[in-house]
Image (cartoon, rainbow, N blue to C red; front, top):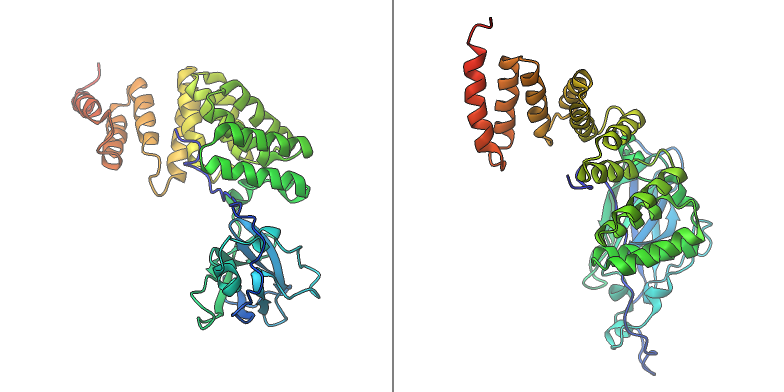
Length: 368
C-alpha cells in the first residue's frame, strides 16, 4: 500500500534561482509598488476575535506580511524585487534573499514586482486553523489586487497529527536543509535528499518531520533498514506525529513481519482511533495472519464503519475472508460482493467472482 494514500501532507519545497549576475547598470524599475488587501473570516462567517497573521508563500517559502485589524481586514505593500514594506509589523520576517537575486535578464529589473510574485500565494495563519490560499501572481500592475476573503477552517485531529509540532521549533539552518531536501525529494534525487535531511536532524535532533522524510528518501534508495530507523527516530522525537506509524506499518507489511504490522497499526489506532480507516485494515490483516480471528474481525468492522467514502475496498475483502473462515457464508458473500462493486477492476476480481459463486451456494445449503 502506498505510504501517502491515507494522510494529508503538505510538502513544502523551494526552487533556487539559478542566475547570480549583478543588475545591469542603468536599468530602472518601470513598476510602482503594489498594494494588496482583503479580509479574513472564520468558517461560520464571523470575524476572528484575535489578530491573524497574513503570510506570503513564494515557492514554498513563507514570509509574514501583516496582521488583520479588529474587523478582520488587512493590507500590505510589495515593492521592487518582491520586498515588503511592513517594517513596523512585529510579525515581519527577514526578506527572502532569493527573491532579490537577479534572473539574468532585464525583465527582472524592468518588471521587478510582477516577476517576483509570479509563483506566490497569500494565506492566513492562526493556531488550530488552516486557510484558503489566494494567488497573487499578476500579469501586470493593472490587475486587481483585492484578494477577497480568506476563510479559516478548523484543523481536524487527523490533520493536526500529520504535522509535527517540532517543526515550529526547528532553527533556521535545520529548516533550510529540510527545504532543500524536500526539493530533492520532489525531483526523486534520493541521495541528495538524504544528505540534506541528515544535515537537518544533525542541526536539530528533535526534527520529527525531517526524520520522517529521511526515512522516505532512504526507502527511495531501497535502504529499508535505514528507513525504519529514521521513522523510529521520528517517533522518539514526536510520539503524536502520525506519519512515521504509517511508514513503519507499510514497511513491515512489505516484509510480511505481521507482529510489527500489528504493533504499529495498533499504536496508530491508539493515537487516533477515529480518522484513519486504513490503520484498521492493516491491523485486521496482521491479526488474521497471526490467527487472532476475533481481533481481525473487530478491526475490519471498525474500519468499514469509518470508511464512509469507500476509499479502502479491501476492508470488505478482508472481512469476507475472515467470515468465510468462521463459516458465516451469507455475510461473507455480502462483503465480497461489496468489494467487487467498489473495485470491479481489481486484479483478483475474477478469482473473487468464482469464489463468490461457491459461497452463495454454500450459504443456501443447510449446514449439518
